[in-house]
Image (cartoon, rainbow, N blue to C red):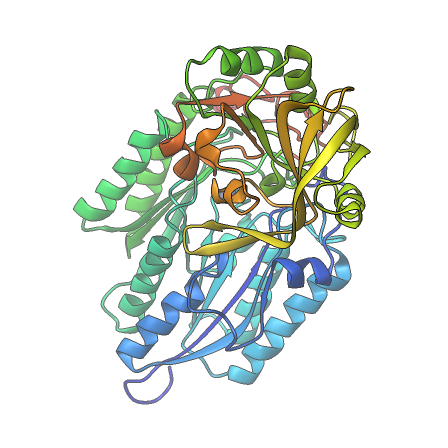
Length: 501
Ligand SMILES: [Zn+2]
């Protein structure tokens, strides 16, 4: 520990979520385009996994402690991280930590589902190298996204983890505050956090906007509040598109020095999750049902989520299955936000606002995303640098165009599409507004998101429909073609705990 009452704490962030099935490799540029802040350059607002930095600034300022900031980097989810980008960021952060030594604590913002070329557990690798550098007595901890892989390597290298409880992730700042409260308590010698974990041996999707997960999250919060032995409770949901050996749902309980108490509680909570397996996912419709249901609604906007073509889960976001169905069924009053197609955007921008042209767009990235759409279109609007807002964050979606689909006579058919160049999940209705489309005036809003959209879109929606269309994403763990995920895990087998008896 450093001298006197002051403390020296190093903080950095390295995060992305790797869909190992995605063809899009993440290089250094992809981090720089999504979010990259050199030491000291992080903005005052948090961006998901970087929340420990701005929160840490406030905490350390109040305490009069020294916060040494390292790099913060986040890449929008896609496929494998290139080895060069992975090693570059890792070594950059480790060199910053080395220069900052001696420190009393290392606090990291990690996502927890990164996979790099030649490295199946980059966060475990980073934490192990940090631990080796600082030794056994310095506090090492991190905030994680629940869509992550809790590997044994990470658990053994870190003192504890705090994980976002909500999905949609509305609580990343709150959880960073929780993390820092544990850091302060431990450095002031008031608490002695120890981490217990439990492997639920299951893969599932756990939206907290609905039951049974809503009550489970509320209870985790109640336990933290009411049980004096428990400092923190987290659920790792796991990430089914990451084909790694330790993928799956896990429980974390951090107690005040009572590991055996934590072990029992982690198992009890984990078995509750397991008992509800298969009941967590939202009910879904295929594209035929979803479009028919949306058209049958008396008032709009009906929000139709193309839930598996979610750029936030690493897909391209260029699937056209739902759009084709809308055209087949003759839907009108439709706005689609967004379809990723940089080439089509460029063609439309060159043609300019008001241009009428034949355009082929969408469905170029991967199989099972539908077919490209060939249509006569009118370019209604262009933006050289479009962005939506999401809470306090700004999410860019790059140069973008708004097109209206026309029939052979040149009449608008009632379907408008936003084409974009920077892949981005449809977080917020502001993505339509910035392109000049009033979302409240539409009958049907088609968006690309699994559940993050819910917090922003549900308040304006007359209905929310979850549509499972095509298979741009490995969305069925029972049949996904995994090579690394263990086989003794539900739903790959019916009851992985049966063989323990
Ligand atoms: Zn997540």
